[in-house]
Length: 452
Image (cartoon, rainbow, N blue to C red; front, side, top):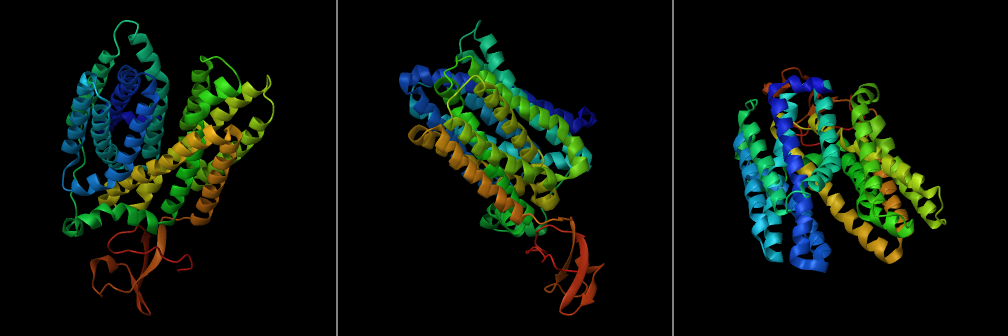
């Protein structure tokens, strides 16, 4: 897996990503303590609103920013986003009002909604080989999982010597280091085509969405993401309720349960490059979605029984399994997007995936919290299990098997002599040929599966 780090451009981008992730983790801890200083017992409400602002910014802004920034080369876009994030982190220790926290969080997440899709769209250009790109996706997933485990431990160690305000300085350093590494990396040259230049703002802002809606495997990806969000929300929102209230265990067992979730995800990320070479995306991702649904429904059944000594290891195993299913579904996402988008559309496609995936979490997070508080853990597990099951069934029906990249299709609107028809032959009302098929300006609809 580490062989992809021999690529100088990717190595610097990945290093910047890791440093920025650690800085973000420190900021998460510091923000919790800042909210408590400002709001006291209402700190949970402040943090909940801040998370909602984060999701709204991700869902609403990513495609819009992608459309506005389509003419910008990636380097100034990424560096500018890092500098904005560093400035926000530098300002956070000096706020004294809740509304100021909300405003700065919105600006910070708007910058992240700029940075992340642009960053994701660069990786397949730096690593065009399928195996290298798969390894890079697993490395990125591994970095996210290790950050979840490492950043709280680092913050706890630092807080023995410094006040929490200094943690924001670590965040600033992380974003500045990321910007410096982006500046030093060599990127492949690319520019928007004439059709993209001429497109209206609305057409650019909705381009990724139209691509997702027209491509069967990407429509299926939305269902898979919803299944992941159902299981992940149960873990992230209700772990503390399961550990402290349902099982009556010590607070120190909460990070143990979350650690099991992270360990499952890390294990899957390490094994996925080899598994994907043997089985392919569809053969792994669809069963993982059904497994997530089954885990939630089984969790509901276990929760309805009286807790015993066996319940704690069962919970740890279930949380680890949730981590495995999330990693198996989310790690290959970039492979599906790369297969389904022209190079010029990669940024728009990743921005749309970034937006729609967080839209799924925006639905399941409050469902896991509100329903769990009013109807109980067993009921919310069952409801989320049914949501995941419906999403998995939808993904299975939407994703055709087999799903080849090369598809025969017919052009009826292009005139004879068009450069795209160089290898086509005349058939009835148009011209037929076969090539790697993606939705673009020349291919606005997915060909029928019966096309020959």
